[in-house]
Length: 142
Image (cartoon, rainbow, N blue to C red):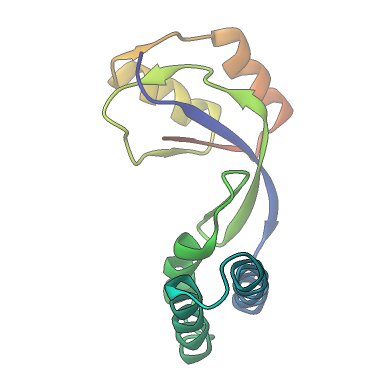
């Protein structure tokens, strides 16, 4: 069967300040949620550690990207090369094994990936439709 293909549309380029703000917002939301639901627990400590790390690295985009991976719990939002992507209603337009880390940013990338890998359940119609509708989109696997 293979792993899933996840499809996204480009939302916007993301500055270091915008990314730091998104992370700060996510940490604060999590602190409120965890505090209400569990009282003081070790999740709150981790979130406070994340908050401290954020403030120490607020100007370092690479470090902020690492922190985003820790605090972003949504599969609907992805960050890649300083671009924010949001999920769209295309999913599993083909399958591939071994959970590759590849990121496909064009129809040409996708065609080359399909040629170079053992893929299954390929829907050329959906692949073409996705790239026609979202030419600045992204596909990744998971």
